[in-house]
Each structure stands twice: as C-alpha cells, then as structure tokens.
Image 1 (cartoon, rainbow, N blue to C red):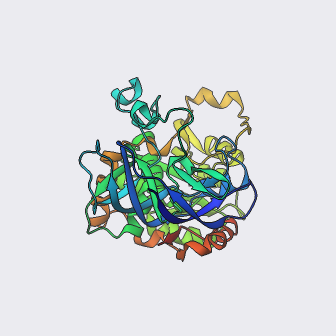
Image 2 (image 1 turned 135 degrees about the horizontal axis):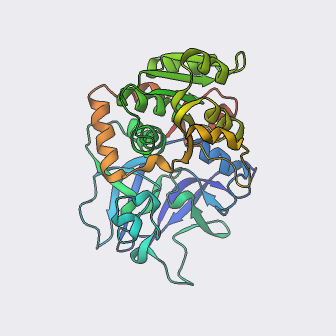
Image 3 (image 1 turned 120 degrees about the vertical axis):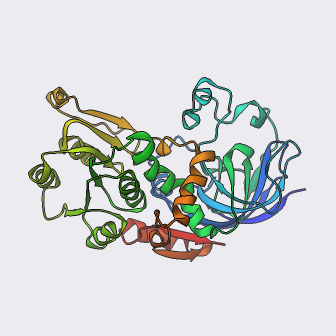
Length: 366
C-alpha cells in the first residue's frame, strides 16, 4: 500500500517544474517516511533544473533542503519515531567505510550502505505518470511526503520553527560548516566571501562566530551587501563598481581565507588572488560539470592553497543540533535569511526570483 503526495517533478533539463500527484511506497526496514513542512530553494536545485548537473538523472522529484515531521518508520529504525521533528541532509553515510570511521561521513565511500540498497528489478519507491521517479540527492524535498534512508535524518527539538530548521539542512550546514569545519577560521583571521546569497550569508555568520577580525562581503547587488552587514560583514564591496581583489589588497594586504559561495570559475580565481601568504581559498558553491579553472602557478609560491568544501565538511548528526543551539542563543540568525515563503504551486516563480538575484532564501512551505 502506497501514499499519495503532491510533488514538484522535473522531466527534462531546462524545462519547467510540474506539480504532480505521485505515489510514495511504504518505508522499508531502514527507512523513514516524513511529512514535509518546509523546503528551501537552493542554487543546486536551479543548477540541476538548468542541466548543469547531468549526473543526476530525470525524471526527478526535486528539492533537498527540508524539514518535517515523521509519519512512519521502518521496523529496523531506532531512535526516531512517528511525531518526531527532523531535518534532512543529503550527505547520507554508511557508517562503516574508512571515511566514516575516521570522522568524515560527508565523504562516505558507500553512501547508501548495504541496508539501503535495493535489488535489481525491485519496484520503484516513487512513481508518477510514466513510471519510476528519482528523488533529487536521494531526498526529494519538494514533495508533501519524503521517503528517506534512516541516515538522512536527524531529530531536532520541537520548539524550533520548521521553516528555519530547513535552512540548516543545506545552506547553513554548507556555509557555516565551510567556515568552522573546512577552513577552520582562527580568531583574528581576515576573511573574504564572494557571493552573498544564502550560502554566502551563512559563511559570513560562520566567520563571525569563529571570531574573524575582518569580513569582506563581495557581491553585485546592493540589497545583498546591506544584508551581509547585518550578518556580520565588516566591509562590503560592490564588484560591479570596484575591483574586489584590488580593494581587499589595498585594505589589508590580503586575506587569510576566501570563499567562493557561488560556484564560478572567475570568482574562484578572484578568491585565490585576494589571499595573503599561506591563505586558503575555499570552493563552496557548485561549479557546473566540465568547467576548468586556470591559475598562474607562481601564485602558489606564497604557500597559498585551494580546497573544496563538500556540504561544509559536516557531521550533520552533531552539527545540526549545534547550529540550532547557536540559533536559540541569538548567535546564528536564521530568521533574516528567509526572504520569501511560497506554496509548492509557486516553485517556478521562486526559481525566477533566484535567477534574477532577488531572493536570499525562498522557502516552500506545505
């Protein structure tokens, strides 16, 4: 017996998202059925919709930055039960591979693990018109119901509003984690953040929490630069009017940490150029598949480095409750990150807002 759910389905790259009624299967032994309360609209969703992430197939139930309430759990699930509030995360982990065992579950080598693997020829878990549907990043958050591996959810306290909690699942986990976990910003460090959308705003907050001395926010939209100040930026640079690298180097000689929050080859080069000796450039945004970055080799003689950051190097079962404690304490501002709330039927409009640069974070509410 399955469940009916309204969901946002993408059937071809570059096309519009359609709202369809789909069928969701019963949870298997190690699965959790979650009724979605809210799901943020992320740039990764837009990149996928535009065809920049072809390694994820279509037709797909979109969305991944979600929170909700557990409806039902499989018989092998422990520690989660119906009625629990949860945040979902796409860094699903097996718990037994080398990366998991050394404390890097976000780099898991066997993402779903044996318990969650389906035999060949097994019936699809999500079905729509025409047959099988695939949940984006194994989550499918733009749906009234999500059928998830047990290791894709973390239980949270019920006093946290679920539309704010949803942001923790991607933007905040990625941005704050890039600052605290990947870069490990030291107190007194100088930081530059290129791109001040939802992830950039989270990096700025992470840098502030870490005790950064100066935080340069770089963007082409005045509204986002103004918001960046409220999140902790000490200096803002409109890169449509001034060269951000020259401005940063004139002000402090170069930063210790620079973050590309967008996923753009030009911005990543600017990040590297803005570094002082022994500085680190961190690629946080998702650069579309196939693109290459060219950097003059001489720049590395200053012992500078470039690193990637996958989902903020998270251990989300630990990080999500930690970040929510920071929210309760008033040290992490989730309320101001939500620029709009829209119903599922307006998801295409939310994507247009994002493409126009108007949205900091739109949340689809159910």
